[in-house]
Amino acid sequence: MSAILPPRHPLGVARARQPRDRGARRSRRAVRPGWPLLLVLLLGALVPGGCRGTLPGEETPTGVSLTLDIVPLILRADTTQTAAVWVTILDGGAPIADSTRVSLVATLGRVSAEAYTIDGLAVGSYRAASHAGQALIIAQARGVRDTMRVTLY
Image 1 (spheres, rainbow, N blue to C red):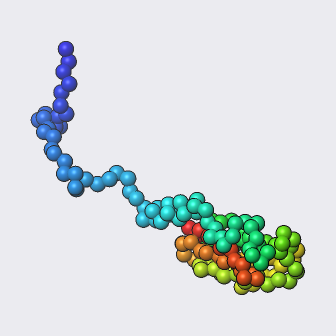
Image 2: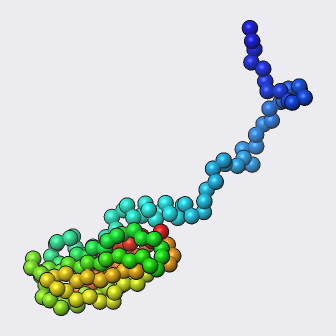
């Protein structure tokens, strides 16, 4: 019968196992410093990003509804990255009058300051900032506003 022998030292001396100090033990996996931030940003993008004053398509007491859409909602943190900003405004279910001014503002990065409607649609652009984070883009017209979140990674 063969017995399982403990590992031997190259000189033929049996090695005794040393107890491990768990506090000094290092993980084999190296964690890159940027991964936790990227994970938080990506998970934050999965949460519904809009902070709407009304539900999409829901009218306010004045009869005006405003819906903000941004494509794409996730951008690289680079000043060359852009997103399209669309604002749809309806008055009593019909498109609002042409040339209605829509004010736009962003908390991180740059957005067109204002846009004007044609057939109830105003179009602007958003340019990303050079550092990661979450930008809130706010559109307002006729006392109604909508907010969307763009994630910069």
